Length: 165
Image 1 (cartoon, rainbow, N blue to C red):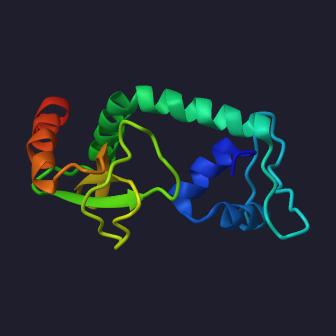
Image 2 (image 1 turned 135 degrees about the vertical axis):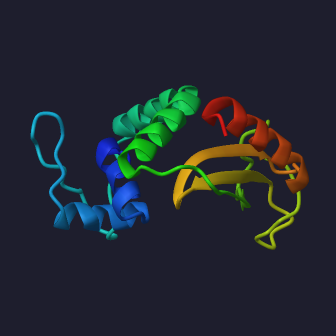
Image 3 (image 1 turned 90 degrees about the vertical axis):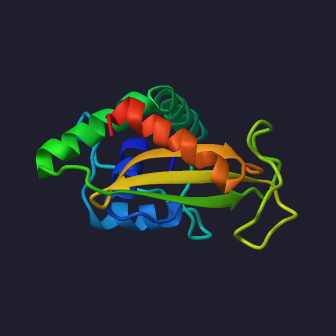
């Protein structure tokens, strides 16, 4: 939902869904911008949410900024969760999945590999998520042709370095 980047991020945390579901959520929950103006979705005739190109470009720039600061953000969020819920990382879960592109995807990441979706003709990326005490604390993205076994050492090294596990 590009018109409402802050609302979209809040929605992804509280009630994740599609862009269309975000529009319905904005009708039932009060979400406002910095000036106190309420975000209200604009519906097209076909029942879809209208996306403003300028806002979409702002959202993409925000995502680029988040990506550049991913490592620091993940550590800060982990430390906050650890302090807030007073937990010690006794057990760490790591899960891998893949997701495919119906188009070309980014050239450096979109590759043919083992398809968990049963779509071997589509290029894909491999995504890994690390969880502690039920909370996701880190994620990684690899080229779609990366073997699962090759990701483990990298994730363990990352956890040791950034999170001191």
